Amino acid sequence: MPLFDTHAHLTSDQLSDNLDQVLSNARQTGLVGMTAIGTGPDSSHACVQLADRHDDVWASVGIHPNDCKDSTESDWQRIVALASAERVVAIGETGLDRYWDDSPIEVQREWLAQHIELSFETKKPLVIHMRDCESDILEMLHQHQRDGQIIGIMHSFAGCQETADQCLSLGMYISFAGMVTFKKSDDLRAVAATIPADRLLIETDSPYLSPHPKRSQRPNEPALVEYTARCLAETRGVTFAELSQQTTENAQRVFGLSF
Ligand code: NI
Image (tube, rainbow, N blue to C red):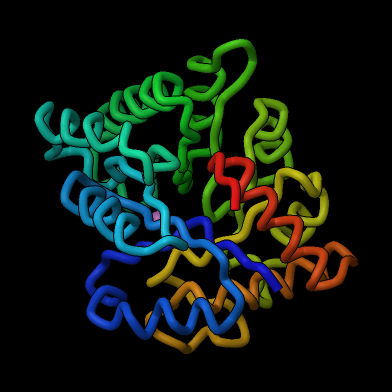
């Protein structure tokens, strides 16, 4: 089955040390694409280099909300320069995080606003991280939308139905990671069941949080996206083949890929 992992931190130490094996496991599982996600200028640059070397890897460039406190204007200029590269298909990881609270929320907001502008300029979708800040994110998205639209992906979605509905009405995609497979995640699965088929994406957010029943496997890796796909297929009452095909088509559409 064709699978597409829309969010993998392939240049993190835990995966990059063993990258040939990680990519080979992914291909054997049926992955036809992976998006390597940057969290700052260095990792974003590394993601672009990786995408240049592998036909089935694309890159997203940005500065993670937990890393934005010490980021500078020259860091941002590096992101802007990378953003126009051919293999760069998205802007992020950006967003807001009140859980770790590593950067003041006002600083996080400013950086998110810059990413949103860059997304409109480049016509590349945002990759948005949201943790313990649903109302803040919705406020930012509504404030910065153009013509009622935000081009983007809510990554590793763990929010409520109302938040999902508002993001969908802005034209966004909702991406689920391993958390949706956990036993305690009935509420999240109930939300996942309602997402329109053409707006649903899957991801690993590797190396973090492996999906059930591989939860003890560390690090998580793109090949394990299969388990999230299987869980979502069951939740939505479709076959694994249908779910895989649909989410892969959605990934191709949101990232503007034709293959
Ligand atoms: Ni991430």
